[in-house]
Length: 347
Image 1: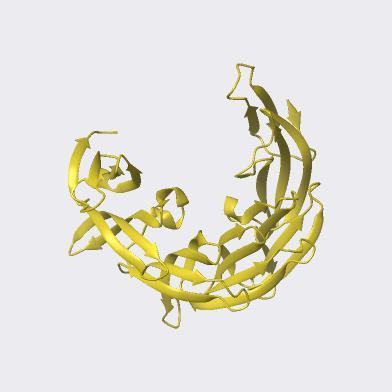
Image 2: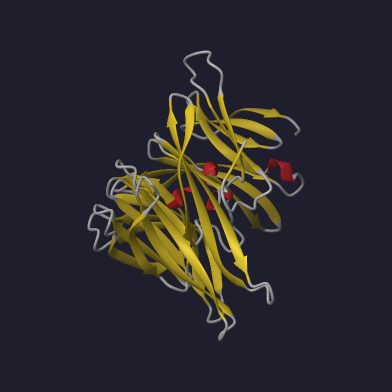
């Protein structure tokens, strides 16, 4: 069992590596102190742990730091390589990416407490660390006062969405690791909590459509956006799709695993409240640059009497879509979306 200096965490990280092509014993390493975010490339695994720092007298949030631990992956073996601590916190694993030279790109939000205004202030950054986790590049002051809501790295580009009242989409050039540069910025209502690549010059945003009534932000429904980043200096929103209303929500806004994406088909569950009835739906969209978001089909479950019928996942297999809830599995036809068969069960 190993530990890291200055670690004050009372849980354990167990890293197990094995080769699926032979019967050799698994390589098991145990460390004191686990993480809350994991990012893995084909060469390395990174464990991140964010620690919030509070004033011992006022319990005000002074800021946060994130510890990064790097392991090399080779032939079923895991080897500790490097460690560093940076200021700020990451949103999720999409905030992290490794390039072909093993430089680690990471988007963070740094929080500090302003004693004069008695409020937290934020500063968003993009950091570039070399293979030894040493800082070699930094881009600061991305929408100060806002928080990062989604990030997507694509080769030598990064897309970052922040939000407070509008949704700025930042396009960042990472071709020079020592000098990450903001190329373009697009401000639109609402915000994207998940970004999904469509092709090399287009990216899909999934999140909420919002407006501000002068005192607070109001959700108008879910929102799909298609962003055109062909011109990095001038990103555009090509088209959008507003789904439902203020009562509409989806697990996909905070868990990308709720989204099915295959062959430009995007499917996800939503929950809604209509005419005194709670419903859960699986929506299936076909996406193209020419026609935008085209709702091809949907499957609806009434969850008023049985909340277990809330749709959790959509899976494509055997030329059909399988709709999964905690109460049943239903297969629907991929062309007319009619029910083929349903299996009921209890969990």
